[in-house]
Image: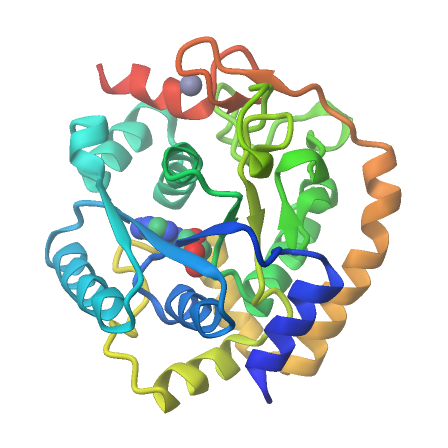
Length: 306
Ligand code: AMP
Ligand code: ZN
């Protein structure tokens, strides 16, 4: 598969990025985000990398070194945000506290904090667009996981462009909160923050875009290996025992063409789902970032760490 063509087509068809945009790529150090950064730079966009150092021992140190070298090599600026400086603790400590206090899974906590930091720093960097390396497998997993949990509506914002004015808030069906999330709901925050940059639209979100949305993970792996990217190919060492990891494992049996059908057929349902799921957009009273309630999920996490 020509994945560069696929990414270009997605960018064009869904109007993901303009030539004049300042594009910030959320760089985890894995193959997907590295591939998308590399491609966008090659396509001539004004890109830079933004990486969160999660403070997960050796794993984070190796990623930092490799990404610093990689970005220098292709001449792209890189900002590394040290989680310990922002929150006072590394991710493992934070996850342990939240597991004990709220019985939340580590990946949920990590995801909430990453989204908060990425949005805040993308704004600091003056980004019009925030790019992530989410691929077809991630999206197909989301569709099936939400379906199996009986929460299809949680996928209402799943599309190549989310955030900004393209995003509408979702609640679990019948207003029920997913188990374990009673006081702290997972999901993307959003809220008003008027008068900022073009990419923020009117809700304090820098628009997040996913050029690899329709590309199977297996093809990205081939691309990264073909280009001989000097990166860590392992999955996050902390992601085990979660529903997503289990789903990922049994989905290995499903072919790429079926994953395309899962994602594309779900996309067809989204307009109808959106009509029924508009939620109010707010601004966190603690930090001013987008939020689904008065206080955003990340500030709730802060309060449990005190
Ligand atoms: P994940 O949720 O780990 O599968 O990551 C999905 C996407 O989020 C990646 O492709 C990156 O674009 C972004 N991302 C994940 N971890 C980080 C990180 N530590 N720093 C910056 N971006 C990240
Ligand atoms: Zn907040």
